[in-house]
Length: 533
Image (cartoon, rainbow, N blue to C red; front, side, top):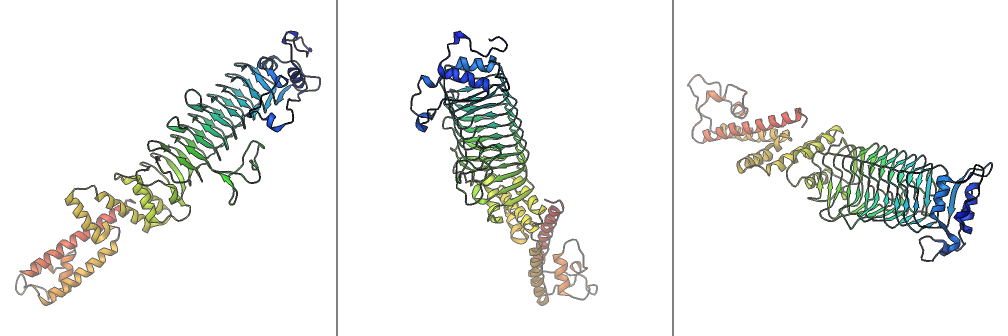
């Protein structure tokens, strides 16, 4: 383009005054500011037209990026452009751009085309962009798209971002396929921050890998055009996925590691917040999250056929602390978590929760969540009887030393199972429940034994049976005789020595049957306890 050491633009470019200012600023590594000083007229998203004094051609910008002039002695070349109207299509597809690039408060007439290009750092801040096409983009440093408005989607599929990707306060509308951000296969070495973002279409992160955390604090994802507002199966986040509120105290931004683009940590109590809101389904199936998935204060607005799907996710901690979805379903089938932090008001009701195969180790309820409500939680997840959710809940309670509550859960499981049995089995189950609570309350069996022993003793004290063989029977003892009838297997040498008849025969039969029922039920309960079920 130029001879070595020659920093002048080719004469055939016929640079305008704005372009000449940009050219010289590039060589100096300084900022070319085309603002006119009126905030309303300088707003790239406003309605005011921008005149020729602010227009630069996309071909001149591309020339600077791909084959720009040498810097002034002692300076580093950089494209730092503010308040410009970039005409035509900016296309540097496949190019290698070495200078630092920051375009701030700019308007683009046509789409920005960056597929398979290589940048050091690229920052587009508060820009109006018709569309960003950047599949397989590589950056050594950050990619910033903060506070931009993109009318027809962002495509960064299979892009590799060397440090952070910033989408804070960006507004993105859908493309022709109904997607707002297409980022399948994206790799970000550090954080992906999309806080207080507005997405109108499907945000797709299928198979993306985030090296630190993914933050959607305070964002609004809305997709009335399709089933899902966030579609991110097989997403890998090395630390935490934040779908929580963003603080709004004092300014739109709280403290952050990368001001002014970051929103900061989850706000403290008393801070005015903007919650995360998802209008449409969300899919995080098969995701891997190194620290946690955080839904605190999140709001989900779904139709009846939409889902918050967490199938087979793996994370040390799931914080399910959002607002209860009024419609749709929450799916936790096959998920594996260590700590489940939740509150009763966050879970949907009957038919709105599926968690077959959901495994967790420790329950950490936030607020009032008694066992009765926890059993309702399990029942809501099992419109048809399934033993696994009850057994998982019992195992979790038992691991924290709450054995009595664990037995109550297993008793509830047996009662729920009874509803699926034939009539005869159901009647037998009712008898076991009424007598000894399926063996989970063995003390009740002792009470029944004592009552029946007392009744038998009282009856046989007034109506002793005759001996089976005269002169061979032991001394009559109504206490031992009644106890011998009640206790199966154990022989006290009383039952076989006497021959009850008439009413005594029926009383003896009732005591024998009752003893067997109580004994077998207690034995079954003891066996379940020994097997830690």
